[in-house]
Image (cartoon, rainbow, N blue to C red):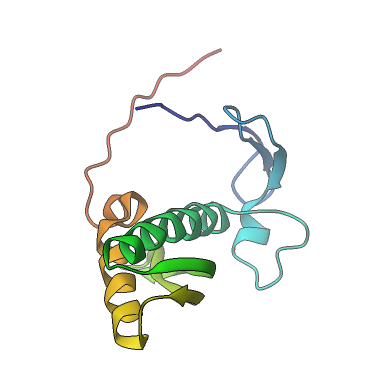
Length: 145
């Protein structure tokens, strides 16, 4: 299985600095980030780790749901998925406090209960969902001068 890479170049302090996130593997873009805009209600033309997680989660969930619908005997015609990732406080520190996946679909061969069952299975089976539920995280850090 492949490894995908993103890179961030950051300059300055947390409150006054800013950075650029590059989607290195796909080369589809470089996006501005800053902590004050991350913590604000209005993004002001920048992205955030939470938005990027939302993008990854909604795409992963859509793929997983398409698979679950097929396994249940249905055929997905279209799926519209959004992921709302909330940045809040936990134990006095910034934390992701919730993710809401919202999906609207056009599906042949499944009723509402079958679609709901497929959606719940996709939530559990999606690799991004799995990564966000207690997966051990390791860090390899070094200083460069």
